[in-house]
Image 1: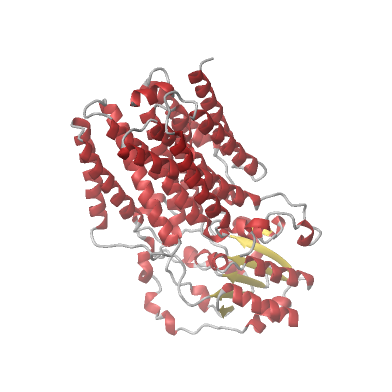
Image 2: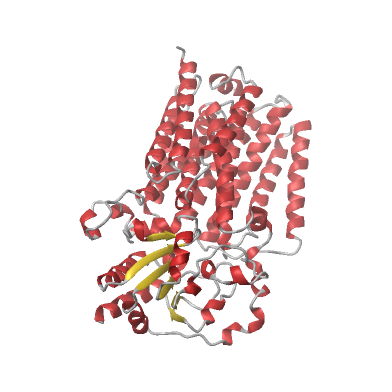
Length: 125
Length: 461
C-alpha cells in the first residue's frame, strides 16, 4: 500500500539521496529568501509560512486516499481535517493581516473618504 | 506526458510559488501578492494530488476538507486582530498534528520490520516533531488566550525531567529502529506530547510569540519529515523552506527583544519577578495619579505628543479611540506621532497591524530608532498599556532580567502619562521605576475607558 503512494509521487524510485539534496537546497533557499524583513512584517511572515506548511494536506490526502481499515481511515480523516484547518486558516489569517498594509494615498483627506477599505470585515467589534 | 509526470511538474510549480511567496512576504508592497501566490501554489499542489493513481475514498476526503474549511474560515475571519497570535498558534499546532498522523499512519500500515532503518528514522522524526509542535502550540494558545496563566510555570527539577523525557524518546526511537513493534510508537507519541507541553510551560507570556515562531519552524520540519516518508518532493521543499525561514525569523524576533533564544527557552523569564525592585516595598510607594481632565489639559496644550501604544491598548481594542484622540489633538495644532517598539503588542509588527486597522497614517508611525531622538523634544509621552518596553531598567540595571533589551526612551520626554489598569507589573513581571518618577502621571483604568474619557475631556475644553 505504501508502495502505491510512494510510486506515484516519487523521485527517482524513492531515492533518499535526491530527497536529501532537495532538503538541503531548500534549507539554503529558506535562509536566503527572507534575509531582510522589516520588523513590521515579522507577524505576517510567520503567519504566511504557517500557511505554507499547510501543504501537509497533500500528504494527508494521500494517506486517507490509500487507507484501509477503520484505524487507518480514522487517522487519515483526522489528518485531512487538521491539515485543511492549517492551510485554509493560515492563508485567510495572513490575508486579513496584510489587508491592513494596503497602500493608502498619503492621506491629506481625513480617513472617511477611503471607507471601502480594510475595516469592512476586520473592523471594530 | 504521463499523469505522474504531470503531478511532479505541478509540484515543481507549486514549490516555485512557495519560494516567491516567501520572497514577497518580506516587503510591504508585495506581501499580499506573495500570500496569494502561496495560496495559488497550494491549490495547484492539492488539486493535482487528486490525480494520484490508486487514490480512493474521495467522498471521505471531500467531507474532511469541507469540515476543515467550515471551521477554519469563520475562525480566521472573525477572530479579533488582537487574538491573531494565538490563532497562528492554533493553525500551526493542527499542521504539526497532521504531519505526525501521516508518519504514524505510514508506520502502522507497514508490517513489522518491513521498513529500512532510515525509513524508521523518517517516521520517528515526523511523529516526534509533529507531536511536540501540536501539544506545544496548544499550550501556547492556552497561555495567550489566558486559559492558563501567562506566567512561566516552573517546578523543581524541571530541566532534569525534560531531559529524562527527551532521553526516553530517543531511547525508544532507537528501540523502534532495532525492533519495530507497533505499540512502542504509541508510547513515543505520548512522550512527545508531554515533552511539547513541558517545553512550553516555563516560557513566560512575553516570550510566547517567539516560541510560536519556533514551533512554526518545527511544524515545517515535521512536514518535511512526512515528505521523506511519503517521498513527496513538494512536502520536503515547502516543509524545509518553512523550517529554515522560521528558524531565522525566530532569531530575528528574539534579537528584537534583546534576548537570545536559549535564554527565552530555558531561563523562565517570568519567575524572576522578585529579583529586582522587590526590596523597595513598591506597593506603598507614592505615585501621582490624575483625572482624565488633567490628562486632557496636559495633552491639549502640548506642542508635541508621542503616543506609545502597548499590549494594554491591543487587549482593550482601543486603537480606534487612540486615533480619535490623536485627530482631536491634531485639530488643535498638536504634533502627534506614534512610537512603535519592535515587540509592542504581542508579536513583532503586531502594533503596526492594529494601528493600520484604525487608519493611522504610515508617516506618523515611527519605529524605535526613529522615535527615540524625538522624545527629547516631546511635551508629553502618552504610554497606553505598555510597560516593559519603556522600562529604563533595561538600560540602567544590569541585574534586571530585561537588561540589554532596547527600549523606547520615554523618560526623555518632559511629561509622561501612563494609562494602566493597575500597578501590576507587565508581562516580564518587573517593576518600572518610571512609574514613580516625579514627571510621571498615572491614569488608572481600562485603556479604552480612559481614552474615551480623555477624548470627552479634550472635546469639552
